[in-house]
Length: 369
View 1 (cartoon, helix red, strand yellow):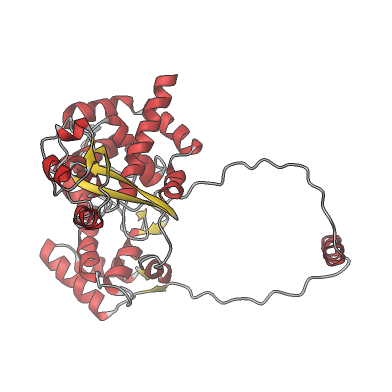
View 2 (spheres, rainbow, N blue to C red):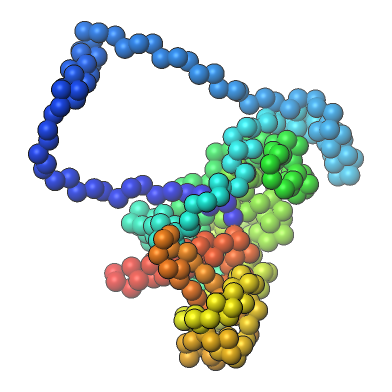
């Protein structure tokens, strides 16, 4: 659920150009050459002090939390409090959890380009080939297409290559006990996730100081929060353990199970096409529920939307999904209950379409082989 990966810039084609060197440029080039040769020395750089993360230590509120949890679970209180005392408060986590600055227009093409790109597609093909059995089995059992599962894991962690470098204990303790001011306080949620994380470590025999994940505390190939691991993760490789860090099969089965538990329906498309009505009031009415399916096909048509034949035959509610395209006109689609289930993984229509289109891209490449 924490997918902030970025892809590298595509190769650029360099063409010969006529270059005019000004006197200032010439002086700069000469100074650069002298610096490289050692004829002159660069001025010493000013050292910038970066605040080191501080351990929470025996902070009273954290120690009370540990004592209560140990008593509730029947754990060794001293051992748990010692582990919690080693958690570090991370300023970078406090910064990353803040909402993005307002004012910048969303751009679906730019967002899409981060995920549907050659390196990720190649990694996805390799992932599918190596885990074809688990993907096929998950599709058969849960009704979630293999392409969608592969697309989701690719968007989340680049097929296990980017799973996060923050100690989960640090991230969750920081957000649970030092949640930053300036946005709605979610410290209670992260304290609950810290409880789930410690239970998970105890249950699976993991060292709480060794597990790493995202800045928000999500873990493993599918980036499950600890609470989601407890509720939705499954042992899909049959080894008797649920391991989302080292077992792609467990990740595949757990993603499929998560989506089914959040309303995924076998055989239902994720979206349909439509043309929006011209009337401003009708558009506003259609967009008001956002990605929550709220309209029947008949209601959409009554409001002036032109929908596809497949959408007209859809049995269930639909949502009008908007994707902004920077300064260009936005794009619109009709999202089904399955599209909505996909957004339960990450509350974003851009995310959901990136997952869908990455999966579709993988299918096309596999068919072209």
